Image (cartoon, rainbow, N blue to C red; front, side, top):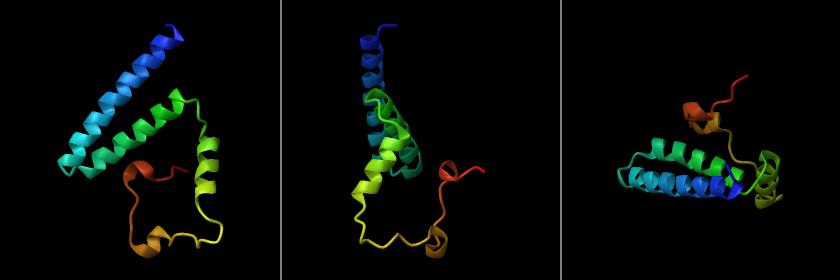
Amino acid sequence: MPAANSEQRLRSLLETLEECRAILMDKASLEPARLLSLAILELRMELHKVTDSELKALCDLMVPEDEPPPPDRKEAGLRLPPYLKLIK
């Protein structure tokens, strides 16, 4: 499959997923919408050839150095959704 056709298919898939996410958000189905957001991020990264380490570096640059770290999720009583739990 030619690269242009593959890119076109990815863009079409992204558009569809974004429409689905908008529908879920309108229906207040936040958890499934978050899952779709993760899929959308992965596809965008693939489309633009962004590596995990590049994304991490960008996130690190966006957080000011003088800003204190966010409170521990356990201390704040927040639980991670099952799809975001670290598997050891």
